[in-house]
Every structure is written in C-alpha cells, then in structure tokens.
Amino acid sequence: MNSKLLFVVVLVFIFLLEGCKVGPKYRKPVSKIDSTAVYRFDSLKVAQTDSLINIKWWEMFDDPVLEELIKIGLAENQDLLIASSRIDQAKALLGMSRADLWPKFGYNGSATRGNLIAGQPNPDLSTSNLFTGFGTINWELDFWGKFRRANEAAKGELLASEFGKRSVQIGLISQIATTYYQLLDFKWRLYISQKTLELRDKSLFIVSERYKNGIVPEIDLNQSQIQRAIAAAAVPFFERSIAQTENALAVILGRVPQAIQLGKALNTQNMPPDIPVGLPSLLLTRRPDIMQTEYLVQAQNARIGVAVAQRFPSISLTGFLGLASTDISDFTSNPTAYAGAVNILGPLFEFGKNKRRVDVERYKTEQAILQYEKTVITAFKEVEDALVAISTLKNELEARKSHVKAAENAQYLSSERYDKGVTSYLELIESQRQAFEASLGLSEATQKLFSAYIFLYKALGGGWISEDEMIQAAQAQEN
Picture 1: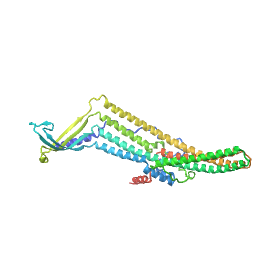
Picture 2 (picture 1 turned 120 degrees about the horizontal axis):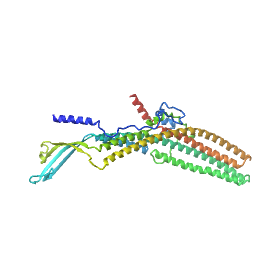
Picture 3 (picture 1 turned 45 degrees about the horizontal axis):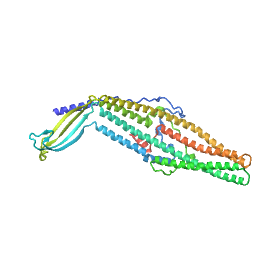
Picture 4 (picture 1 turned 180 degrees about the vertical axis):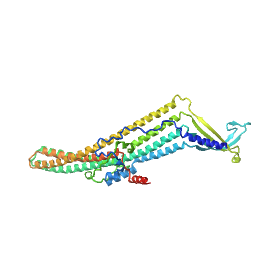
C-alpha cells in the first residue's frame, strides 16, 4: 500500500512540475515595419493579397535549360546539402534534449576478491569474493524547468535550421539564374565583338588598299588599325569572361568546372512577369531568413531559463535493484538487493559565477533580437532596391534600344558619306565606336533587368521551391 501511495505522490509531483519553469517567457520581437505601409516603388500597388506564394520560378524564368540547371543545383549543391545535414543534426540534438526529461536506466556488474569488501574489512581479514549485478535508475526531476527550457531551445534551433535551408534554396535558385543570365550576356557581347571585328577587318582591308594607291592618308590607315584592335581585344576578353562564368556556375551546381549548355540567346529571352509584392509586413512570414532569426531569438530566450535553473538545486531520484553473492554458484538464488535515494545538489557560493551565466544569456538574447531587427530592415531595403531597379532599368532598356538603332543608322550614313568623300574618316570611326558601345550597353542593360527580377524574387522570400512541394501543400490543404 505504501509503495502505491508513493507512486501516486511521485506522479502528482511530476505533474505539478510542468507549471514550474524559471526564466522569461518568449515574446515575439516587435517589427519596425508598419503593417499598413506600402513600398515606395511598387508600381502595381497590390497591397491586399500576398500572391508571391504562387510564384513558380520554373515559369517565371521560362527557359527549359535554366530550369534544368536549377534542378541540378537543388539536388547537388554542397551548401544546400550542408544545410540539410544541419537539419538532421538539429533533430538529433532535439532528441537528446528530450531524453533528459526521462529517467536514465543502466546496469552495473562487478566481481571483487580481497579482504576489503564493499569498503569494509572482513572481521578476520580473510580473503573472500563478492559478485554483484544491478539495474540502476537515475532521474533528475525537472523541478525548475531546466530540461524543458533546453528542449525549447533545441526546438527553436531545429525550426531555424529548416528556415535556414529554405533560405539557402532560394539564394541558390537566384544565384544560378543570375549567373546564367550573366553568361548569356557575355555570350551575346562576344557575338557582337566578333561581328564588329569582321566588319573592321573588311574596313581595314579597304583602307589599306586605298592607302597603297595614295587615295587616303596614313592617319586613316592608323585609325582603322586602332578600331580593328579595339574589337580584336574585346573578343578574348569576353571569351575569358565566358569561361570563368561557366566555371563559377558549374561550382554552384556542385560540379567540377566545365562548359555549360545554354538555351535561348539573351536578346530572345522573354522578360519575367511582374510580381505583385503585397504588403511590406508580409515579409515577416515569407522571408525565410527573417523566420530563421526569429526562431534563433526564441531558442536563445529559452537558454536564459536554463541558466536561471542552474542557480537552483537539482533533485534526483536514484536507485538500484539486483543481486549480490559471495559465491558465483548461488548468485541467482540469493535474495534481491535494492536501494533508493533522493539526492539534492545545488550551488552555495561561487563568487557570482551563476548570476553572470544568466547575464551572459540575457546579453546574447539582446544581440539575437537586434540581429532580427537588422534582418527585417535589410529585407525591406532589398525589396525597395529591387523595385526601383526594375522600374528604372525598364526605362533604361528602352533608351538603350533607341541608342542602338540611332547609332547603327549613323554608322551606315557615315560609311556612305566617307565612301563618297563627303566627310572625314574621323566621323566614320566615331560612328563605329558609338554603335559598338551601344550594342554592348544594350546587352548589359538587358542582363541587369533580368537580374533585378531575380533579386526581387529573392528579396520577397521566393515562392515554391519545387513542383513536388507545391503538390504536397495542395494535398495537405485538401486533407
């Protein structure tokens, strides 16, 4: 009867412990983004809904080759594999933390021979044997919530690692796409340089023949040679840029440096559709890096409770149950040996060490909150930067197109005027230079506009990572 009563008392005692947790309760950090605010450069002004979650990068970029490269990166990139491993590590740590809440069972066996048995000498100092085998139990009761707070911290770390992986995924998609369009840009500028070199080779041949026949002065020959050399120097420059960008993209994909297959040329690529950005306050729930830092704050806040609990005594239940005998032959026939105890162990005076431990965790929590605030502000800035980049680059691209059209026509007219002796060769080479630079500038501006769309996708927190994720989410909603 006494043993049953003791069992009930222990259960009630454990139940009461659940309401006893020292340390501050977690409170979500306050955001500095006004929930009713809108973005300064949001031309669409779509602030009522958050449609970004429906964004599919494989449709946004509209290039099968780029889509395949992104899939390869999501499967083989080492940084992403490391992030996945960190999640597994966090799960294992959470399992370890949960195990501390429960009793620890073990075993202990020994065989001793001598005249000192169990710490006591034999009366006649004769030599004897002692064989023991026990099952042990040790349960540190979580009276102050030390283990539960540690469990909270481990959960926060796990959730942070999961959002950390998603942040890596979105960053990887953006990095692959940006590098891909940079590669297309270099390819197109190489094509422009090669075509310009062909034209200037022909022009140099004509000028050389005219110089040999005394029709044009030597200065025209030198100017033609200069223009030809400028175009010739651009070709290896862009060849080198292409090779280095291919190497960089291959490494991002998780592979050794190699040539990269490309899809449509840059000037034939379709621009991504406009992305409704929604309310700025929605960044708090869709940016994985913000969610990651928030859960890190939660984990660090729980560690304050762990530090506070270490200032109080720990209460443990210990015991053993087993057999003991002086003769191995009758080991199992002997009566059961058992013992139980309640242990209290706590700090008394450590010159303020335990108090300072709590202070350290509080300061770390303050730092985590400040890091959260910084992440939120940075995220808001990145969206604004992407929006203004898209808005201004659209206008710049139209101006670049007009520039190229006018420069190419001016080059044609200058060539005709020079052939007829109406103008000097200086006018012709100046028109050639402007047409060449205008074409290169148009390619670069096109690439920058694609990169701005990619940056906005990343800044808003991305959309679906894969079609499988989208399908699983739809099935979860149906259930």
